[in-house]
Amino acid sequence: MAVAALPRVYALSMRQLYTQVIADVRDGKAGTIHPELYRAYSENLAKGVSGVFSPSAYGDRYLDMQIQFEANVARFAAYKAFHATQQLERQLADREGVERSPEEFDRMARAVLNTFNRYQAAEYNTAVARARTAKQWADFSQGDNMFLFPNIRWLPSRSANPREQHIPFYNRVWAKNDPFWNSNQPGNLWNCKCDWEETDDPVTGDNPEGIRPARGLEGNPAETGQIFTENSTYFAKAGQNRKQRDEVEKQCEVTARDLIKDSARQNPLLSRTYPCEIDGATQDVHFADWGISETAQSMFGKKRMYWLKNEVLNAPEAYFKKATYVGDAEVDLSHNTNRKTLRLKRKFRKYYYCRTTLADGQAAYLNIVLHDDGNYYLYTISKEIHEY
Image (cartoon, rainbow, N blue to C red):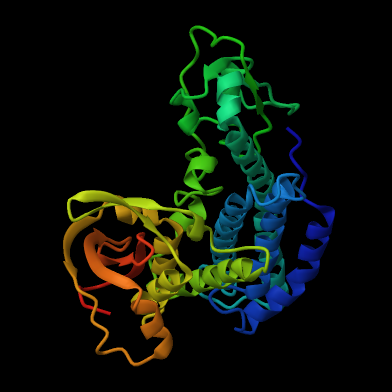
């Protein structure tokens, strides 16, 4: 598997950025998260992901996966930039609280940035590897491929110093539907350079058990939609200060929105459905632009809890799985005066409510509507049951 090296132009641009970032921190202008530092990390990781999928001979076949992964690495980059910014601010004074001289601070700050930059090489290579693994898995899972090539062979690493953890897997064959692949794939260790291939060769006997993936690289990315999981160190160490976390997630939301603004793209939720029990029967719940917009605005517009909004809209399946049907209501248009809203809601037949639990532990209600087209759609998520 050809894992790309960190582009030289990135390293050069980062060194050029150091002076600006250090000066901004020293002058109190960096904020919770330095925007240029975030941009540099995010753009670099996004290029690693997009390079796997584009140019593609398959049109939009992988577009949903690409959008989801780019949003994921952008969020990872935001938390990384947050930690880097905070560590830089800690260098303004020594352990006794004595302010450092400009020369000493400059030296300490550059050491911090160099450390985060070294991490970036492994993160970039791992993002490329896991994006490629996910793309391959999507191909492996196609109907004809499943029939013609029911198994997968783990191929040896190209690294001069291969990881010992994966060596027992070399040239071993597992069935595609073996639970082994849920947690074990090339790329589930940092800087992994292993590969795999489809095969109709028989499954090998006495195969070894899987290993625990590196922290932050759990799960099959093609199934989870995540390059870097919530267990990543940058995520795990954040969140004690909700105001700061909101600032970080705001950056994530802006980036995700910019990705979707691209004329060639659409929100990946529009192509998905999630099962939900409604009035005693399991129904597939769809998404529409108006529902996604209402969910983001109605639930989170006032308090600007970006972290919660991103959590809900990036992983709605978790909230549907926990949802319990509690009742329904007729559509009442008497309190709506906006013409656009009235045109939309005249197509609603009925409201249905399902109680769920959000990421912060608070109860909330999925407001699902039965549309004139016969489909169920998520209209919004509210803190209490009320008619819209």
